[in-house]
Length: 368
Ligand SMILES: [Zn+2]
Image 1: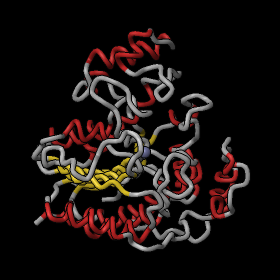
Image 2 (image 1 turned 45 degrees about the vertical axis):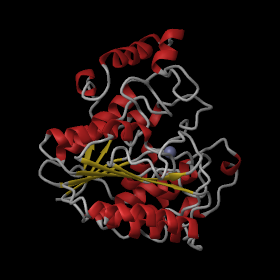
Image 3 (image 1 turned 120 degrees about the vertical axis):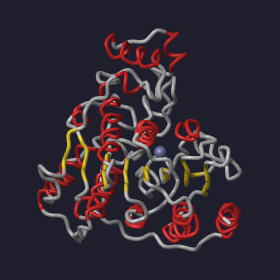
């Protein structure tokens, strides 16, 4: 069974506004690159449906969903709605598709979970909105598609799901949804002392979570140590029927919203390592605020999921797509050539710090 890519054109033209970190193309560029490389076709691409309110009620409160739809219809919020639901804020602004766009991402991730009923691999790069709360918008996330996808998997009869989150930020919304659950094991690696400031090493979410906050400057070798000593053993020992990977692209060196310094080889190796550990794998996107690094990383993930070798140099059509991107940050003025010509970053090797080893030992003790 070949992996399925779930996407939509809604991401191409809708934007959070000109100043928002998400005012950059992401999924649309991934689709363009995958098409240009010949990695998408009629068989492996599915258009994401827009989730209906009733489907979203599996996690979100009906009054919040109503408020979100009303905000989209009126293109304005009252002070009461802003304070009660977190809508119309700097991080979760009012914009034209503020219900339809996240509801499409949620619909895609839920469709992905349904397609996995008999097994397989699904990639839903618009998903991964791991901060969304049941009754309010939070951290750029209006809905929580990872939670909705996991609930869909549980509804289909599964009772052992591992959720792995390698976004630079802690998955506070997912953790609060499944705290204390015996059916879900959550494993999160995130930058310490960064918003939302949850996910401490000692925070186990009632036994359901393994949280590893990491220091700034995290390098590839440190990440591989985390993969070998935490992510893989904690996944395998749970004997998952399904794995959901939130593969946020903001822990790489050139991302403006974190101080982690991975190369995208870390993400590709994670995907390759998790691919065969369960009969079902749902890979989601997440954060990622540099348009080149997001597009290159998630396109590389799709290649890895398919067992397709990543070429050393992209073809001309792909390079034109990457050269056509614009970004109003300093780093966007003169992008390095490898952002145009390649998918893989150069590795960022380094020493494995003792503090990391000690933290990993503390978490590994819980697996004995
Ligand atoms: Zn993030």
